[in-house]
Image (tube, rainbow over the protein chains, first blue to last red):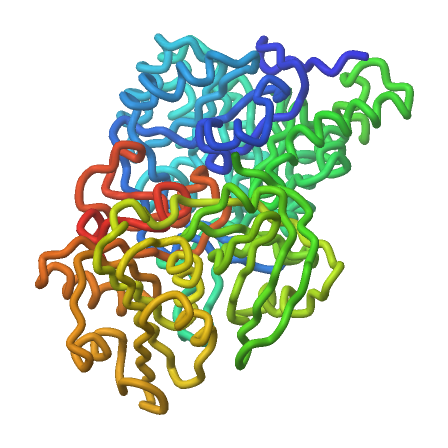
Length: 300
Length: 253
């Protein structure tokens, strides 16, 4: 049975990865999960300098999901290269580093640093709804998506995966723009902008007022967008948005995702990733699927 | 070693208005420390985040939690009965540094639903203990606290003990201490920090914030640190992992 998948020339042992920001750099979850069993670890977004993130409360639970506005707190690229990459190099898994920035120059600086590091993939976050400058400002305009993609592509030595926002009218336009800019793959979806109001305190549930909705509640939106994008571009897709079970992961793969990322589910089941890896194998065996390629985009 | 497992409910009783005492059989109880907490997962899948609840008492194979119903999740827990199973993750966080208080004159200060962790702390700590418990009106755990140290009570409505808060109780009873351990609402901790600075005594406070992962990965439950934190490299510490107990002078309150 073959569960290996190919993302822009990088061969993953299986299609299961983690969604950036839900797994740190893997150290905390390594107490629960054998990181060797994951297709790849995707790290929390890293910027050129340390970012303090947003005030608290940073999260709120909503029906079947949660809203977060962490604000991309991160220790900066220097610490990340010194501490987090060496930690992950001890495991037999691929490393995809998520990159965030406020300006094109910020993104370029991080990508240039990472180009010299022994990592497998870069995921470019142009879709964070929780920071005022940068992030989503790049992800909601096809011209900006194409421009930043081609700038980063010039500097990266590893494949670059553009992470797309669902907070647009037509996500396929952004996907095509990234493809035109030279992206090697796409990650979708980032969180959906949402809001929760605490009626007892009569204020916003998260200090940032708005936040990104994630978790099982957003899965149907994500599956639909993966399907649309898979039919609009030729790039490999990493699908995510509310994946908690094997069945969820298979929906994304059948809709056209080459790999999947488990995000919010890590919070309610730290073993979700390895359970899904095993679940996909069981599904393939039961349904006499020899190669996972047979499943990718099988639903037309 | 942290563990996620199915805990079995040994017993549960209501010990005050919306306040419940829950005994759970868990494999990691022996490793638990006073001031640590566990995460409890709802059975209703619409509630995706675990609820962090502080440990009130520790036995060989069991933990006691005393919690207040604060929403739909804790309301779900309040219906648990002996024999029921519930997913838990524990034990989490650092706990109170008992070694800093051994043999000294100590204030154990709890406010509202911050009182429960003071029970196990009092049981384990070998020191001259003054337990100061602040309630709105209705008392809970008072008899058990009294069995483990000198108990001073403050109530907001004055129905029992000192009328006012825990600091009012200290002043009214002319109490002093070498070390403070405190858990309660932020305004209370802020006032205790100021008191400790004024008296020039070390003070450890247990912090609270909305949490998601409970293990230090998601960065939801941060508090501001005075110095640049060595893990985050910014002025933030993770309450779930670096705390919940912090030296009051190392964080902004």
